[in-house]
Every structure is written in C-alpha cells, then in structure tokens.
Length: 116
Length: 121
Image (tube, chains in turn blue, brown):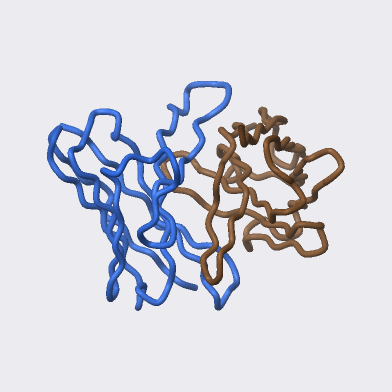
C-alpha cells in the first residue's frame, strides 16, 4: 500500500515560517490534503478535538483558513507552509492522499508543530 | 452550520461490544459518502471504515474486518459503527467524517470531535 512519510516534529518561532513535508513515491501524481489536529490529553474524559482541513487539492484553502497556510506538491514531496507562525498554530498536522490501488485513504504519520 | 456529533463511546472489556453513532446536520446527508477515522494513543490518524451515500458499498481497514460494521440511516441523518470483539488495540478516539470528492481528489471535511473508546480489563 502507499506510504506517506512525515517528520515527527517541526519547530518555529512566532512570526517565522514553518514547513512540514510529506513524502511519497511520485506524490505529485496525487492530490494531497492537510489537516490540523489539536488533540486532547488522553487522561481527559469526554469528547476530543475535531481535525480541521487546512489545505485540499494540494494548494486550495477552505473558507475560514488564513492565507498564512499554503501548500505545494512536486516530485516525491508535498509541503505545508505556515507563514508568520502564531502560538495558536501549535498542533499535529497530517497529510492525506487517496490510494487508487487500494481505493482507500492513506494518512501520513503526523508532524507535531511546536511554536517556540 | 455543518456539524457532526458522535456519541456512544465508553469503557468496555476485551471481547465486548459498543455502537457508535454520528448525527449530521447543516448539509444534505445522503449526498455524501461518510467515514470513521480513529486516533490511537500516541499515534496518528487511521482510517477505519467508509460507506457510500446509500449504504450499498462499505469498506474496512484489515484490522477490523469481520468485527466492525458501518451503516447509515439517511432518514435520521445518522452514521453508525457497530464494534464487536473489541481488542485493547482498538482503544482510540473515533471520529466520523464527511467525504468530499472532486475528480481524483477525495478528502474529509468536516470531522466530528470524536468519542473515546477504551478497551481494558
């Protein structure tokens, strides 16, 4: 099955640029989508936090997502770029594609963005 | 407002069963395929199961095949996940999500906030 590889962690200071990569074989032939997930601590009972779509179709932003979020996809690497990073951007970020060979979605392992 | 709200999570012993529900609002439910995606402690997102708009086609990740059943009731704008023979490794937050499809691109938006399923003796 298709494998997506993300770095476990990325850090950036407020106001700087964070780049999160998503590697896959010839990923440029696929549409890549990105999610932001501010997961809750496992000791907390009750509901969790909904992942939020921040980029779809490689480069498109859903309504309500700041222009600071952008995406690109070329060769074997897709990239989520967050400009002018803010404390509120601290979260886990996941890339996702649809694997046509299995007809199933595939997620990357996730990248934790830390705002310094 | 487009919204998905899950319920039915809880603590269950290994081998037990749970039924998760997800109620949709703010959009035409039977216009969309739907899915369940989980997050295991300390790990990432994992697609669990998907169902097409009228329930005639379903699919599952290999690890839950034969144990979980996805279904929907379009009259009630509801999605379900029947989980049987639960294992410790099924412990996770379970999110329902709406599929969006445009040409070759398929993504999930929106997502529910998720319910916690804990399988423990």
